[in-house]
Amino acid sequence: MELKDKIKRLTNAYGVSGDEFRVSEIAAELLKPYVDKVGIDRFGNVTGYKSCGVPGAKKLLLDAHIDQIGFMITEVTDGGFLRFIGMGVDQRMLPGSEMTVLTAKGPIPGIVAALPPHLQKPGDNEKSIPIADMAVDIGMTGDEAKKRVRVGDYMAFRGDTFDLLGGGLCGRCMDDRACFCCILHALELLQGKPLAVDLIICASTKEEMGGHGSQAVSYRENPDYAVAIDVCHARTADAPEVQPRLGDGPVISVGSNSRPKFARLAMEVARAKQIPFLPDACPAGSGTNAWTMQLMREGICTLVVSLPLKYMHSPVEVLRMNDVENVGRLLAELAQAMDGRL
Image 1 (cartoon, rainbow, N blue to C red):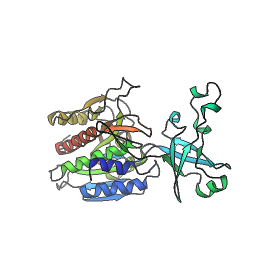
Image 2: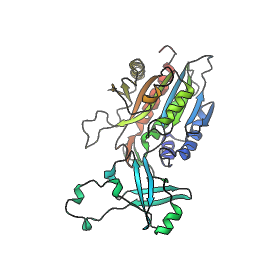
Image 3: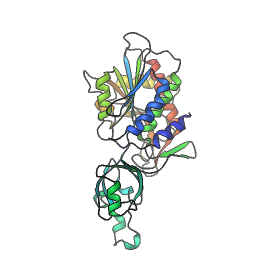
Image 4: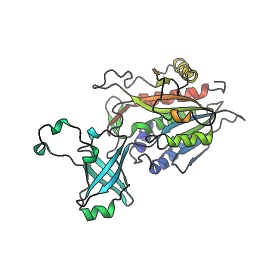
């Protein structure tokens, strides 16, 4: 399966933070050919293990989260509409959005109701509507809706990933499943290559709600080193001050949860292998799983490597395939450069 097809398969599945098991099964299936063994824990985390064959070798964890932003149903009204709360979403883009309600009896399509301009009062179109005032229309009466939908059901943006010109790819949860595919690409490049460290691959859950999935895995596995691979903001027309552009390659962070000596090694490897990259000064929290992973046990030497992405936390996240490939190349070369002396 081509790398782009792996991204599409993962991103077309539904797995809102807290209910990722559908995606976990796909991630485990994609990971299985590259590792010695793979398993799914009670959190839904997928963990794969690849031994280097050296007794007592140090362990390198590569992590990317597979949950996505989304919603939860809070009320089914007598009129058949659904009230909801958001998890990591921007309320400005919701009116008129297509949704999928993930019920125990199967997915249901719906749309976030949008008041036509003819019925709006002066100034209404200049205001952001609070999520508490929104409702989802699933086309059912109150009695029908209450038989199908329950309070606590998850909901996600609807729509499949599609190609853009110029090597682009657009979808609703590139954050962060595309980064898991960066790891898969690295493993493809590492086939038959000698390593001095054991690899632990983690497709973690619950990142958008606090990073609890990777926290559980890093505590259990106690790796010596850990790399959080996540997305970062790329330059857009309405954010021209953002440094990375699509096509600039991996972004390597330096800071308190992206250890300087680890970051320097990654940059040295990128330069030596002619992999394009950008450095990023991040003295405090990076907003990635590295923040919680580094705190486990006696502490873990962590690094953040990022994939540039446009329109983060929206249903139309955009990346470029050559960035995915270059992040994978960097991870593969970095794994080969690790000799346990970092």
